[in-house]
Structure formats: C-alpha cells, structure tokens
Length: 387
Ligand code: SF4
Image 1 (cartoon, rainbow, N blue to C red):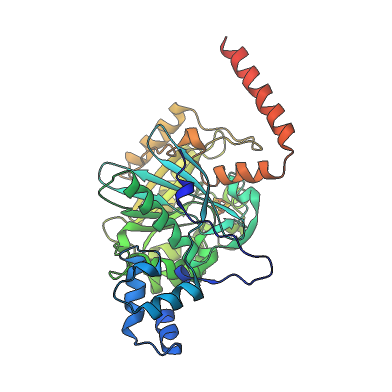
Image 2: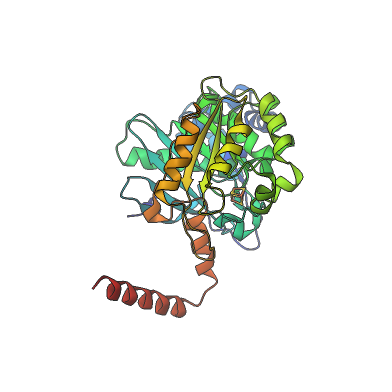
C-alpha cells in the first residue's frame, strides 16, 4: 500500500506565488541567505547539514538554531516533498513511485533493494525531448526540467520509505535512468550530483552515482571537468544510420564524435563506462550488430547491459528471442566484454524507463468511463483466453 498519506503535499493558493523550496538551495545559497538576514555564516552549514546529512526536513527539528531563525526558515521556505500519486510494489521487491510535483506534474522513481546495495533510479525531467523511438518517456515530449531540489527530494523520499520498512541502510547508489535526459538539464543535475557526493550531505562516492545519457557530447565533456561521476551511455546500436533513426541525438553527435568524448572521459578506473543496449527483434540483435558494437567499444573499459525491450502500447517493436540474446551476449563475452542480460526490475509494475508516468499521463486525458470499459473488456478477454 502507498505511504502517501504520511507525507505533506503542497497545495498552492492560486493567487500567491509559491515559496522557494528549501531543497533547491546549495550551501553557497544558504550562505547568501544567512548574510542577507544578518545571521552568522556557520548557520548556513548547519541548515544544509540538517536537510541533506541528517535528513530532518522541518526547521522545528533544527535544534542548534535559535527559535527566531527556525521561524524565519518556516516562513520563507516551502519544506514539502513531492506528493505520492501512486506506489507499486513488485514481486522482485523493487518499488515504483509516481510522484506529483507541486505544480501537478508526474515523475517517477524506482527503489531497488539488492543484497549488498540499494539503488535508486531517479528522474531529471518531466518527460524528455530526445525522441528516442523505443522509449515511452520520449513519447511524452518535454514538459519541464526538474529543479535540483526536486531531484534530491527523490532520495529523501526513498530514504524515508526504506526507514519505514525497517532497512538499516538508505540509498547507496543512484542512477539517473528515470524520466528525462539528465544532461539536457545540466545545471540542476550537476548541483544535485554535487550534493549527493558531498561528505557534508549524502556523502556518496562518485563511483556510486551514475548519469545515463543518450549522448549529448558537449555536456559529457563538461561533466568530465565538473564532476566525473560514472557514465552510462544509452547506445542501443553501433551503426550510425540505425542509431540516427532510433535516436535523433545521433544526427548531431555521431558515433565517432561520441567515442572521442568517451575516450577522454575520466571514468572511475574500476568501472569504466556502461553501455545500455535494448535488444529489439530484427533491429539491432544480429551478429553483425554485435561486431559493430565490439568495434565501437574497442579501447574503452566497457560493460554492456543487454536489456530485452519492454513492450508498451503504441510501439511495434518486440523483444529479441532468447537464443538471439544469448548468441549476441556470447559474441561479446568471447571478446572479454562483460555483457549481462538485464531484465528491467519491476516489469510487473511497468518497470521500464518512463512507463508508469507515461501510462498515467495517457490516462489523465482519457474519459474514465471509457477507460473502465476498456479495462473490463481486457479482463474478459484475458479470462476467456486462460479458460
Ligand atoms: S531513452 Fe532517455 S533520452 Fe531517449 S527519449 Fe527516453 S528518456 Fe529521453
């Protein structure tokens, strides 16, 4: 069941400008705010640490600050987290949350507990404008970027949920593989990543934060200089013509240009660069495709995640047959390229990138009676088929 009732949901008054979210401020902005209010500079570090290190999300609990400062913080900032629109628990124990931002947009996050780590898959944008043909988020288009606070709020919510479940540990790994192209929202994603790895905030190592991109080369180069966290590339084919058809970004930054940037990226030595490769029947799954892939990753420390595509309404593409996937995998592993087959966690709860939000967004604009009729028809067909 959803824990949504336990969380405050922001309800803006139509005529009043919304308050600044407290979670959007970097340490430098808290310092500026303290200076403006005539407060000592060290108060900035204390506020920042209460929020992102101790995860106390109400100024009432900031016990080392004066009552006057706490009142000021309560009055000047919005301290609410996004609301939880829906919450699904998979058989594989991953949990998917559809979150509602304070302006009513929907984004998703997935909490994936493993034996030795807990990974959180987070969103960076509402929708996405990159238009990859196999992706449900791409079908939504871009509504807006998330702020750094809205990105970080996903960790705060996930940690709160893990605590409620009695887990001794919170989120240990973060992957930007939810909705959106993170490098298309560069400044907010960079600020959020800085807070994730800051020892005075979430304190994760850069090797535990992965930014997944479709291949925005200038931003990959910027990230290399600003904060070289782990990099994952949504590659999906190493053939330029095919990639340009599947992923419009390739028409601007071809495979050669992308490869050059990757060769220069200071990826953590132990991990190198991860390539995501959705397996689509007849599209990118034959041995010639595997050969091109091997040629592309040559010279890089690379791991290739083979991901049988999740079908969703509105696409013709089908996942590759198991023997095709095995042959493809073998071709890579025979050449010392690790290539695990990864089924998206939470497939029974629309686990693929953007699928839950896209499903709800579809439904939001539909006549509920028509939807109910459709669901009844589908249930009847299903039970007829199984009887
Ligand atoms: S695969 Fe990633 S970059 Fe491409 S449309 Fe989907 S969310 Fe955007």
